[in-house]
Amino acid sequence: MELDGIHHIGVNVRDLDRAEAFYTQVLGFRVSERYAESMRHLMLDTGGTGLHLFEHPDLNMDAALRTLSEEGCMHLAFGTTRKRFDGIVAELKEKEVPFRGPLVLGKGESVHFQDPDGNHLEIRCPAQNAGD
Image 1 (cartoon, rainbow, N blue to C red):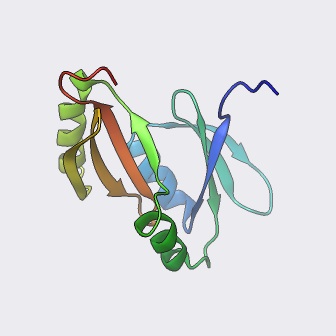
Image 2 (image 1 turned 135 degrees about the vertical axis):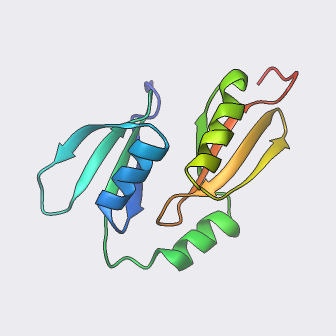
């Protein structure tokens, strides 16, 4: 089997409008496609892999996210360059996004935070003097 990589990643959200605002206004992604179906959902262009947001207003995400992210390792990590990283950290502060870090983990430096629905996110760059 020969695949071209990851086409998109699906993420559940409770409020599509709120999630769209976060991912476009805070993280700078753009909506590449809106779907006219019974379930509200849209695709974001992240620069390589799509991020597909699915609205589930009544979904109790707390227990699932706690199991997947805090007891497990489920998260979405977005990459950036070492040169842009400090500016991104400053932008998160300016936009009042609570985060943990910066942390040097292995060959990378990252900040960790959550979207409005509690999905665990990371922004990562190569650590100083690392060839990540």
